[in-house]
Length: 361
Length: 75
Picture: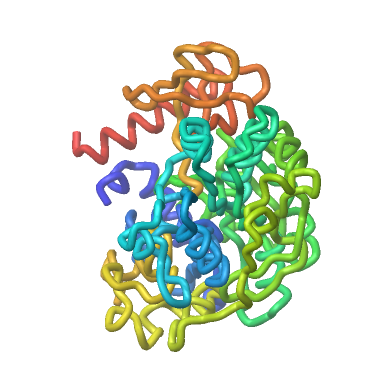
């Protein structure tokens, strides 16, 4: 990418090479847990520029990809009910459930809307009081406050026809599940920039201490990512395992307390199923009991089917960093962006879609 | 999905702001940040400002973004 032609990235790459050489023959593996990083890494070509003993793995950083198939099935069931309207973020619409997808349900006549903001769902509900609008809420710490604020508006305005199918998740328990599982040995986390805007970098301190794993909160420009990798390498060279912030222009140690308060006002922690990772304690968010009137599952009497997987789909292993997408037998044959089998091929931020688009096959 | 864009508050009415995102104007809810002011730079995600930045930091970041944009456009 041409931005790497400027002098600073060249300096950063040189720094990365020097530090990697000091570590050699030891090889290090860093995991990014943010789909926006996954995309940025491929788009910028950084993966191909790194020394051979520095390897990057993609973790469970794409909210679309980690949403269990059973929740997708529940969303489809809701969308098909007469008089209901299901609104959600773009990529979720194409994710296959066990028998259909929201996109297919829409083609068959269901009212499915893609929205940019949860506030769009609020506007839909206000504009059409006769219609039950259900917002299929996914997302990590970055997105959850926007959903919490919208939910609070619905509550405060007494808006009875806006419900939430809440599948929001928090990232640190998933990072811990990967470390505790011990299937992949990690030498550092490239921590998610915009999740950390909300959580603050302090949220990773227990992980860094308990598992002796370096953590660097990193931004999204090519320069940011190169600097983040250089910082992780320096920690490896010096034998440190600390939390550092490369993305200082937006991330503090404390994060955004006001946004977190809004989340705590309407949500409480719950155990949650992650595609590929199974159920992780306290990794999800459920509506507080007093907001039951806005809980789609409770109000509509819909149940989430138990965890299922498409036969042959390796998204689970991809999300745990065990294999790279081309190692999946379906990759680029039965599973392509036009006919995706698993969520990692659907989402523009999924590892499989990134490998497919940027030619690492 | 956590993609967020930096923007400048150009109009402010209660919890609703009009923000300028690299020349495009759109609406953003500013209820999640402390004391938003006209002229503040904010990070916008899914229709909400999720963080704000001091003018000093913003000037530095803007310089970086402009530099990156310039290089990417091949100027």
